[in-house]
Image 1 (cartoon, rainbow over the protein chains, first blue to last red):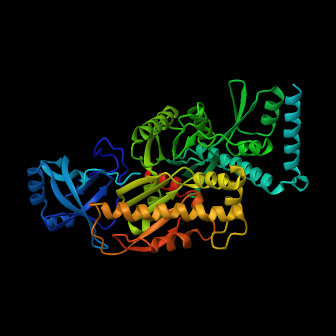
Image 2: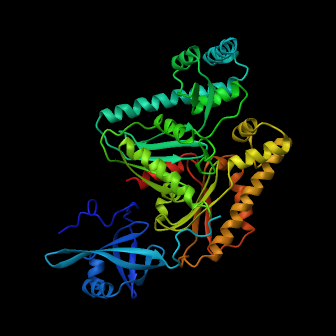
Image 3: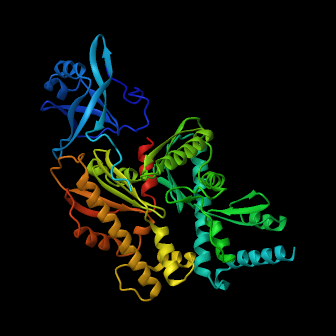
Length: 117
Length: 380
């Protein structure tokens, strides 16, 4: 099954989603491929090979177990990382199997606007 | 009545003059305005053809204090952009004046017994009557003490974009970063614009101006870097990691403040200061007169504020990513255009210490359209 990312409503969106090659979700030292991301959310495709290698069922169990969790947004081309706090906002299932996770995130420091003058 | 006739005669002479630029003593300025009007109408033809062909496009629009710029993709897959001066000029209503405006295809509207000319056409009238232009916006937001601000900005926007062919066509417009203590002003500004665009039939949403610069210029860097949009009203800064805005802030400095400050200290009209700044200022050369010297001084002052704000804000942030390589910094906006601006900026940047390494400072490919292009990227 292919998730139709163009029509799938991650949330009541105000932010445009981008598919950025090399963007990854790092959770407990394992990398997972990001299907697309916006200024506030991430869609993780749990059917991709990268996720399968990281252990799809393992990550689903762990993130669903927590209300909020820390993770890194990673640019795999430069290995640069942005630490973020995330929470699951939607679980996308097909035939009882979780195929994608929609996450919402925030910066470690709560405010998006910093040092406004 | 005599006054009205006199004004109409002046206007008619002006129009006759621009039809024969060689007889116009201010030929250079007049010609550039005419070219702009002609370009605008050509672009509009192009847009109309595109719509007739059934192509639905998203639209990016930069709502700037000085100019409003729209950007979309045409049927030939090339970007089509148009701009209008975000300004207007009122003249007494008379049938003759209205007829002249009609005949010359100028942008105007009637408001309380006044003919209000807007966009680039307003600049011509301001020059002709030696008056100052009125602006719907100040420091990036709708001007609170201008009673016609909302009405006129809608008129100016409508001269650039029409109703969508299909309801719900996406449109993204730029908004500045909120300034401390003025957050509610931004809420009002954004809501008025959104309501207007939705009323036209668009699915409208906003993008931060600094982020728009990054989206326009840093695609090959995975949208990681610093975007600085220096406009007429304010300066917007955004640091983004993989398109996620990490730091965004605004500074109350820009081209208008430079014009005003220079105009005060050398007792020259703001319009003349602006013309000199936009047409002949070269920051790489020593100033040749008082006006240029004042422009250099206030440019230095603005750049100093910007680079110091970068150092202060970034060093205080606990949200910075762990970067494994230096990131680029992009500059956009009208005040960046004078020759020597980037060199001056780089020189200033060397005096401050940032908690991250800058790989290079670069100018946006088209500094006046970068925000609109970024809004277009965000609208898809």
